[in-house]
Amino acid sequence: MTISTQSSTLFRRACRSLVGGVNSPVRAFRAVGGTPIFLSKARGARCWDADGKSYIDYLGSWGPMILGHGYPPVLRAARRAMVRGTSFGAPCEGEVKLAELVKQAFPSMERVRFVSSGTEAGMSAIRLARGTTGRPLILKFSGGYHGHADGMLVSAGSGALSLGRPSSAGVPLKIARLTLVAPYNDVGAVERLFQKHGKRIAAVIVEPVAGNMGVVVPRPDFLPALRRITKREGAILIFDEVITGFRLSKGGAQGIFGITPDLTCLGKIIGGGFPVGAFGGPARIMNQLAPLGPVYQAGTLSGNPVAMAAGIATLQALFGTDPYRKLQDLALSLIEGVYEAAHRRGVDVVVNGLGSMFTVFFTKDPVEDLAGAARCDTRAYGRFFHGLLKRGVYFPPSQFEAAFVSIAHTPRDVAVTLAAVDGALSDL
Ligand code: HOZ
Image (cartoon, rainbow, N blue to C red; front, side):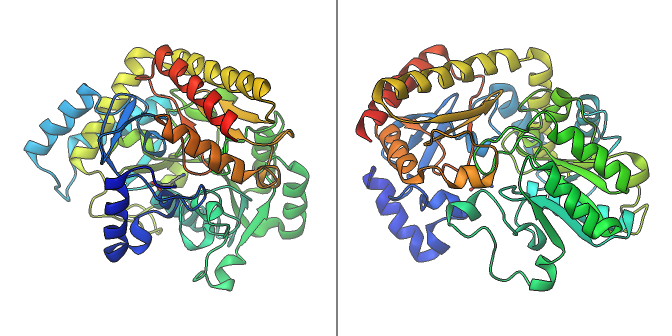
């Protein structure tokens, strides 16, 4: 299905110099068919493709753009920082200021280390957990995505799922065996893994609200049980809040559910659209990191001054306006509208959502783990996606991802989107 002439020309050209024409697999549209549209511009809640066609954007760059694209204070801050220097490779005040803002919102993050991506945050937090406990094993959940470090590409979500390959070639079996996997929301399976592997488990890493098998919300007992079990067993609990941090609330998912993890990974929103990740936790764990401790971690562009400035401006805007109620109301009206349209059109859907993130699953059964997400009709999602795209609405190009609402979306955008949803469902 080819939507845009310029995009198809660009894609053909891209395939001659970029692997698969893209720099991140899920962008290739393999999960929904057709060829990717190339974007040339984005402002507010809209993006434009290479042919100049505009879309209401619910991809939001996979999560960072909570203020909408080109939010003026963020642009101004980044411009000002750029003029002062694009990279120092030395400490700068912006790093301190962003760390203070992060700490203010996430009291569990007594010490912070900035990196350049969510992948780096996840892999460094895991190394730190192993270094601190002296234990080798990590427990993750199937469909959970924590970046593409070797040990995390085991039953992984996101692009790995959209390609139907939840585990990757090139990960040595010996490394994969250090990762234990339990179904999301399954406390019994976690207990059984701890019974079997006892004191060899360094950490449990979890997306407190899963966003990379589509949105899956934790059952009420799930996160409290993870906290209780890890504490009892002396293992470290890592919340991967790369998506949910500053998305669900100022204090992320941990703020909403009232659970304090040992370590937290952040990314996406804290960079205000620039490449930033972070991880943090209590000083007694974080001080195991170099230069204070024996766990090594480093990066030339870590704490980059332009990215820090964009992050600071983004967090200040979120703290200043407290947009979470508005975001949730917009998302709720979308979700209700999708259910109404699906009912009218006789299509079975389940829409999982929390705050301003949601996923439309084509199924009539609840989706509470990867098995549930995998049972959904992903081909119907692909047709739905293209039906929306042709009507000027850009959803994530895979059912195993989250759609995001920003503060730039308006009730009028929601109404236009719901008309497109109705049309796309009637095409199925
Ligand atoms: N890992 C991202 C989705 N959860 C995809 C990143 C991208 O393709 O840009």
